[in-house]
Length: 75
Image (cartoon, rainbow, N blue to C red):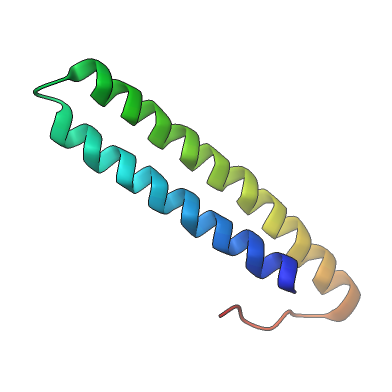
């Protein structure tokens, strides 16, 4: 269960980073479009990381269910 919680925490971190980058990109768009574009791309990469982590959490939950039944809710 600890591994599932840790992976879930990583997902929230990646989403938070993506939000940070996209907010900065919006602010910079009028003054530095190239940097804003870079931040936009970084945001997308972080969301991709979150997707890959989600796949792992899903796999871990499925394995837990197969072995022990429904896992307890995460904090």
